[in-house]
Length: 357
Image 1: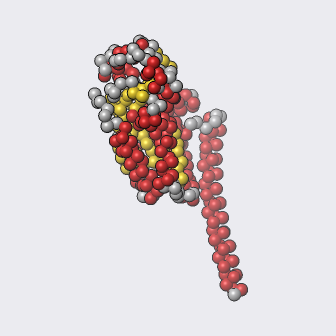
Image 2: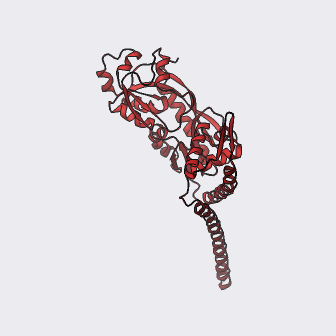
Image 3: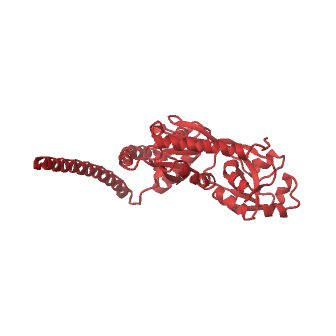
């Protein structure tokens, strides 16, 4: 009996020692990366630059251009360019030389990329190890702030009822995302649908309608046709990164045969996010245009009403993205199937009678 107890004690001690060694090795790797980051920080004598800008630059340097970097990080080429400019301003150096048909790394950009790549790779490796040691119930999803606020959050109660074992982590961001490096399982992105190397599902189309509060509509007796909108406050959203061809007031009114330059008419307030613009419309401050996924719940509840039945189809769609590795996790797969079912039910119940142009 004593030998059995001693044997068990030795086994526990050995297991503890092994776990302690693994922890020490893990801490050592973290320490090495922090030392390298601090070294880079000390060399520049400034705080650490934004991580999203570093990812964008590293991808652009590796692909020798913004377009393919955007495809890898699931954002537009313009978004990559914006983050590179942000990093250049922070560093005070030019990383890319802009040419008529593309970009080329400067000497400084080449040196910076050579130092940055290994650091980001190590950070990705350590982050993946940390994720594996964590709770497998956690599913991380990223989407734009407006989609999270107006579409995803109102549905999370149904997700808890259907999959109580899922612990959802929501990141509201338009920044470029590297699914593996950033520890993201699922990304919902608005774009053209070209996302090489990932599993991709079409989630939702965009149909843009003009909306306002019920009281605003009731008091706008002279608002009988789209041209009359020019006499009322038109609310605008101005996101940090614009997608090519996105529907704004100029394009929406043009589809109705109404000329609008953006300066004519009764110009209303401008907002950095669509959800803020819609909050302003719901409080009676004017008329907004927004895509179907962002206004469906407000239309159902009566918080907003369509000014006219006319709707314009947007040039982009919302896509559901995940890596092949993440798709093998049962809870990630279940979450994605739930998202697809919610999106399809939403479009079937909210938009069956919309007039298209």
